[in-house]
Length: 239
Image: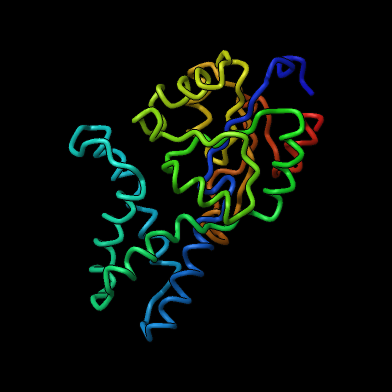
């Protein structure tokens, strides 16, 4: 382990895409639902459209166009819009609620749980996600994610990349920013975390957006760790 990482006491994790496979999970749920209802639907396009509304919706909150709104409610707003776009008009309110909670049932990547259990032996491990607390808690129960603590943008009423999210996590953990390492598959998240004094670990998730649609997977020397997966991250941290 690098000497400059010896002071790290906690790891905070981005969740959607880093810990769990949102695209594959949502597509599977939508495919099964469409079959049960006799609907013609491209499930992966539906999943992509739902996720595409995520950042613009959070930006509306950040600009003050919407009051503070948790992700469950933003997901529902987006769902209502894309159901219209996909010409799905026959769903009951109960069915819409069930579909919206698909984000509570996302499946982890194959290395996730094993890697987290190893990392947990030496570090406090916590979420630091834009997902709301109930969503993240239900997801942890569903997927067997062994968090010590669930931290969410909901706690700070600021979505990442606002500094209040990163600095608030360190404060709640009772640590200095440099004693916290942000773990994410998204370079922008890590760059913002580093800007506010956190250590950073990039974990590659080449299938997050589907085969052949991977983002920049090149290692970046400005990050403290570049890892292939959570097992590799645990190896590099000596867990």
